[in-house]
Image 1 (cartoon, rainbow, N blue to C red):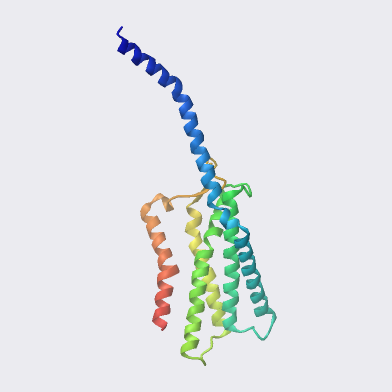
Image 2: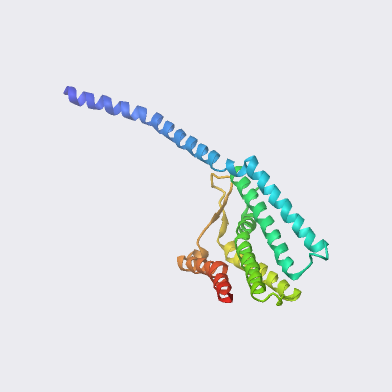
Length: 225
């Protein structure tokens, strides 16, 4: 056997002996990088300044909400919309903190039903916040055009009821696409799949969300002006 052939066999044997060690090192590096990225991605959301800011916002929302319903002076139809906005804002803040903690820590045991509830709860503040702000903006715009045309209590309550009903109705398809993934390496084990396993159905649902939450309320608001 020639020297070149012998050198090739020696190098080949060294490669197969060293490959498992290199593979282990590379895997450890990947795991470490994932832990570093995961650890550095969320801490600012749980930092003291932001938590203090969220606490102040929550207290302000609670004070306004109590004032509207406890004092006859502030108990007006227009302020009911403001109180609803404070309630929705508080839900959004609580949702943000809980979702951030779920990404960092295993707060509770997940399962098929808990994932459906968690996914719907995390998605609910988006239509609630947008539709509530649109409703309040439309009410302010109507009063600005005609200061003597104040809405009745029944009409305001109907608007609030519609905001919550539409928001909950939009969560039904969301519940259908949420599933539990026990093999996930993340602490949050709730995943999202295609609606009815169809890209067309998913596209229709996304389009309906866009129209109902953003486009139609904005068009109605601009038309009112």
